[in-house]
Image (cartoon, rainbow, N blue to C red; front, side, top):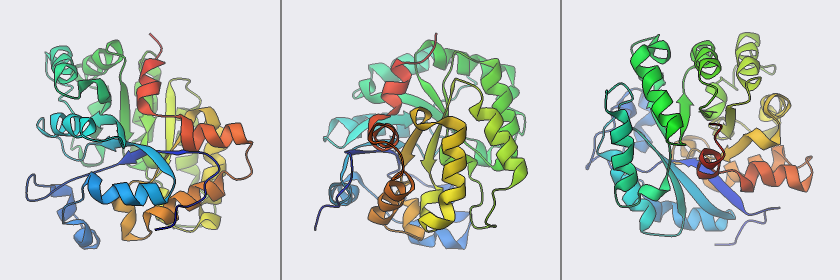
Length: 289
């Protein structure tokens, strides 16, 4: 397999692994189009794809809200050289969340823990981010120097803005540009763009140029990428293919190529900031206190 020529070494800041036979993935049953994903996907499957695409390190991200998954991902990070960080899950509402975070860090591979994520996409409580117990958990996350990934629907962005404004000590990482529908039209939705801009205006927020890269060709994605660049700037953007979800419409190498194309007009330093420098472990180390 020929290695793809990239301008800088690439860090994949967002991918997943799972085996439905080991742990159920209920979200995979939510739509018929997800049927091709109802099988195992392992780091050993990703490794040759990453090498061919010029990807030198990755960040594996949780998929289910179950406490057993995160220790497994941390242990996985110890077994090879590709996975450089883990974004896991823990119950932020539990009174002993600080102890739970400490236990994860003390577990095998705990040094790879970069942050946590909660599946807001399927969270039944629309006010989850504003709950006092959740805010307490988020403060514990900040105290531990970790980040919090926001995986949500566009309509939930306003609540994310409020949470990030209320917790300036915590870095919030927006996954997939807030899952905006890039196939709906040429111009970005104005309501989404307003909330997206409000989140970007907060200095403790970062955005992943991810998810959308598997949805459409680079020319169709450019208005969204340009808006993200204008709002967050290269220093607060990071690249993530969202493998294996991206394989529903695009190959891993294609997604990397789209990211390279969308950042090609930037300076080498700016392109490197997005494609090859940022990683949640580094973000957590730089988290404001």
